[in-house]
Image 1 (cartoon, rainbow, N blue to C red):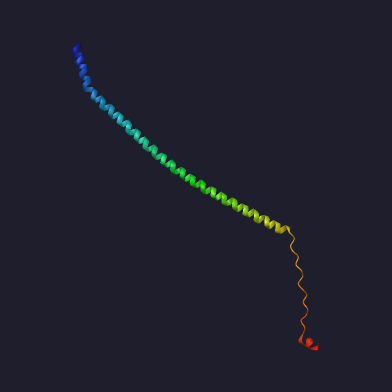
Image 2 (image 1 turned 90 degrees about the vertical axis):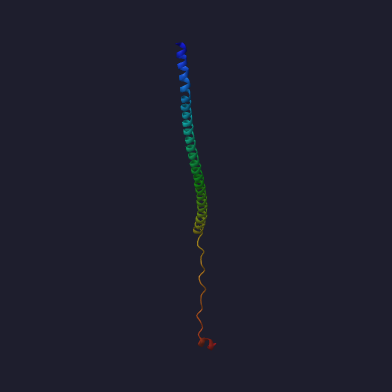
Length: 113
């Protein structure tokens, strides 16, 4: 009986072992496929993050250029304001009165001389 039981168990193992191996291979392949999909998704997310970072860098450069231009405009405006204030602070130059005009001599007055 022991031999019969041993024979039944070993025969069963030989029959089920390949089925278990196929099942294990399928499980490994399923896991590998899932890992590959996750890797592809991670790569897509990384690519998108790189694009967003590049866009943010361009926006930062544009903002920096705008702020530099605004600063230059502010400096020019300060200079203009200072010049205008200096001009207002100085008294206006007095004009000398126009020269007196002598009445034009008439031709009869000239001939009398």
